[in-house]
Amino acid sequence: MATYTAAQTKGSGSLGEVLTGAKTFTITNHTGSTGTYPIGYLTLEGNPIANKNLSTLNPQVGTLIPGGILPFSSPNITTTVPALNSTFLFDVVGDTQGSGSVISLTSVNGVIKEGIVVETGSNFISGDVITISQNDIQAAGFTNANRSAILDIFPDKIDGNYIGTNMTGSFGTYANNIKSGSLLQTNRRFSISTFGNGGSFVFTPSTTIVEDTYYIKGVGMFDLEIT
Image (tube, rainbow, N blue to C red; front, side, top):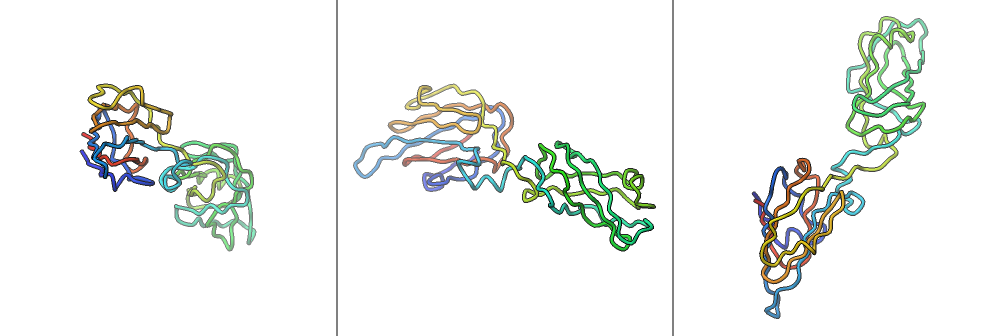
């Protein structure tokens, strides 16, 4: 349960709490300088294009950047490959998703410490890793390679788009001055209007909405309580 004041939701808004199961949104509107209640607009925004702050919170999906250096999250690999500096190519996939990429590994004085993107592939996601097994590394020609290579995929290694947060779900139990007809919803956001002194509604997300992956934004002079 949390309360968000008008000051907190103004402008780009406030990062939201985890939403799972049925949640009641209660809006309490306040009068303005004229003594009347202004119309209020509540928005829950999970679209990183509309709110650039979400770009740093959501994963990015796309192709690997050609020539990009993928650092190891695993320790460096040692090998007794005969040549002083040897390079071999590997067809790779992401551990979670992504395929069609080719990565080169080069030993320098018997040590391999990073991968280079040769073919970009598609549908890779930041935060994932690429694993090249010890057996594959040895079979390619790196004699006595001592371990697998685990390469990190950071957002700056991907040419693509950030994924938004799924904000879909069901709505109901509208009360007082909040009406179903004012609801606007897309996959990445929803907004609803409030009149008079406010009211409430119930939102049940289709899937759990993770904390800090969306913004709660308000236009008007109302406070919001989620229970």
